[in-house]
Amino acid sequence: KRVAYELRPRPGRVAMAPSVAQAPAATAPSLPQAPRKPAPDPVAAADMTAAIDRFLATRGAPSPAAPQVPAAPGPPVAFVCEDDVRSAVRAGARIVVGPRTIITPAARDAGNAADILVWIAGAAP
Image (cartoon, rainbow, N blue to C red; front, side):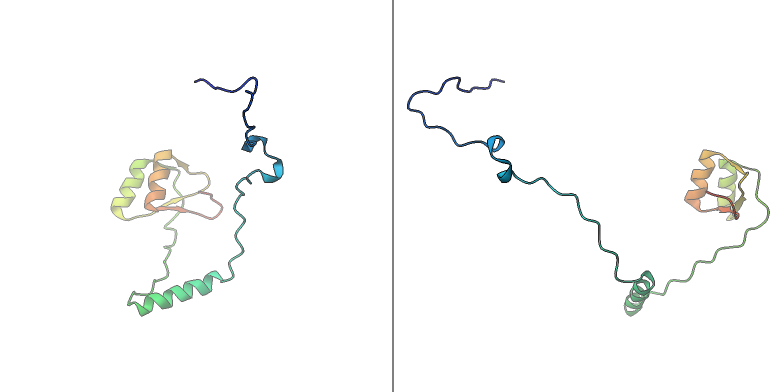
């Protein structure tokens, strides 16, 4: 690309207005600002949940039941592979794992997706 500009002003030519780059800093356009942190929610979560449940009840929707967490069905297993997870999903069973349980990455992904891994106390997922 070629850029054309004058080296010497021609006689009789009117001087041009300064461009944005040559404008003083006071008139330069402002840069976009980062969004501000939202104000804390003035409504408590329990109050909001109750209001939503009341609204849904007026529309004929059934009230949500509290999820029941089954008790851990025994001691943790030592090793979990993807085939163990698939078998548990077919049987509708849960797999109890502990802090020393060896879980293959594929088994962890499948178990978390199916929500069948039960972590005992002191174990982190």
